[in-house]
Length: 374
Ligand SMILES: [Zn+2]
Ligand SMILES: [Zn+2]
Image 1: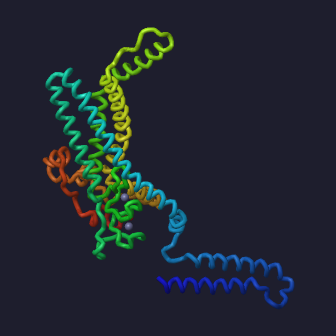
Image 2: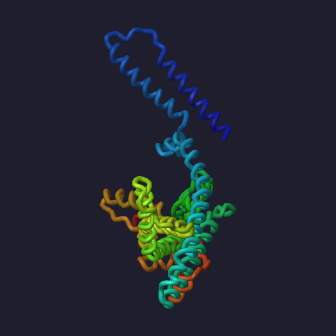
Image 3: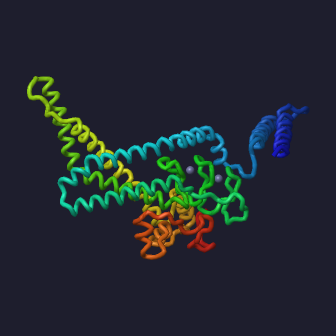
């Protein structure tokens, strides 16, 4: 490292010397070709200046992306640290909001269901609601605490497609560096601030199942509390109207609600607004991830593959995703389904089985002759 610096410096000094020599006026007249000579010298000076500047930062691995990365390094550092710090806040927020929703359902929604619904509906609500709750808690815990997977640091001879410039370790196919976790992640999908963890090979299934069951849970809560929400909303509206009316004209006093009733109304409105909005937002995210899984792509690969498709199209070639094994097979690979009963035991029930493969070696559906994204 030290010798390379010394070499770079001596090269830069040599070029600087050349530059100075060119700048100094030489003796002897140039006759009528003075103008041409000056122009030629200026262009020579310009090109030497450029080489001199390049010699200060150039090495064989440099390109414009590396330069941009270097220039934006302080910005990335701030964003990474803020995201890392906000990750803890976001996890606390998810736990707090989910707990508040569950508490409201237990305190206000379930008692209403018990008192108004026939027995078979009550049983259905109890079973379905608790199944969703268990699935959400299990998958959130697993997604947040399971390591997404890293390439082995002690082994050098692993199948790799490149070297990570930050970790200085071989990078297997589908592996990408996460600057927030500051490590290479096997089959990296994205860094999720709501989990404060990267989504990769070993927790992709937990992440997707959490999104799916959380969305179903929110839909369940917003549908089952819809009537109660309408009642609570109109009660709050009437109370506000009446109190303003009473204050202005000293007429009929507002209906007297107990503290429990007022709390119930506000809680139900909070529950319905929160679960409906989360259901819509999470619905879009879950659908997007379902599309990606069906295509055998991760979020990172989506961008790479799109660029590759465009590049090959210009050359008259067609891009084929080497990790696409057909829609159903892609789902089976993600969920770890090997036989029919696994759809129940591994997808509809909490299961901590490992995903297919080690995240380092990947079966490719494309032969070497075919174009593929790296
Ligand atoms: Zn890395
Ligand atoms: Zn990460």
